[in-house]
Length: 307
Image (cartoon, rainbow, N blue to C red; front, top):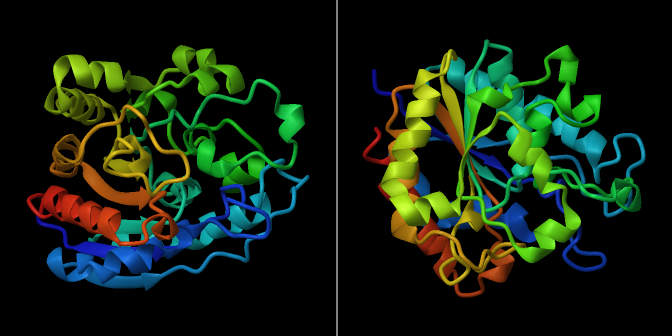
C-alpha cells in the first residue's frame, strides 16, 4: 500500500551550542526555507503542520548535563505524539528539522509501537562520548549525541523516557557516511563507537564500493533485522562542504548530491521504511539559498520515486 508523505516541521535548535554569544542556532529556519523551495507541493505531500519547541537557552543545564536537556526531553514527547498520530493515519512522516536531537521524538513514537530499526545517514557518528566530559558538564549537545541517546546511552530523561529506553537496539541501527577528522580523534573516544553493535558503512566504504552498494548493504541489514520497520535519519553534513557548506560542522570529504540521492532513495524505497527526518541545514549560512534549493531537489528526487 502506498503511503502519502506528511511533512511536519520540527524547527528545533535546542541540541546545539550557540554559534556565537547570544545567538540561537539558525537551523530553526530550515523548515520554512525548504518549504519555500516547494517541497510540500513537489512531493505531493500532506502538510502536517509544526511542532514548536520550548525556548532556547544558551546556559548550561545541570540536571541532564546537556544544553537544554529538559526542553529536549519535553520536545521529544511532543514530537512523539504528533509522529504517532501520523503513523496511525497511515502516513510516511517526513520531519524537517532542526538539529539531530529531534531524533528522540520519532524514536520514542516507534518504541511505543514495538521494535524498530534506524538508518543513520550522517557525517559524524553522533555516538562517541567526549574524552573529558567533566569539562563540558551541562554543555553536552544532544545534536552531537543523538545516536547514543536513542540507543540508550545518556541520562534517563533523554535516553529512557517513560522507561522505554533504549528506543532502538544497537544491532538494529545502521550508520552510513561517517568521516573522521583529526579533531574528532582528539575530542571524542571513537573506540567506543567501533566497539558498538551498530553496523557501519563509513565514507571509506562508500569510496571503495560506491554509494549504491553502501545503500543496498544498509537496507539489507535493516530488512533482515527482527524489527517491524525502520526510520531514516538524515544529517546533511554527510554531504561534502563544497555542495553543503550551510551546516555548523562542514564535512571536507563527504558524499556528493548524486550519492546522497542514491543512498536516501534506496533506503526510502524499502517497504519497511516508515518515516524520516532531515536535519542541520542552516539557512543563515546560505545567504543566496542555493544550498537549500539543491537540498530540496535531492529530497524530491529521493522520496518521490518511493511513493
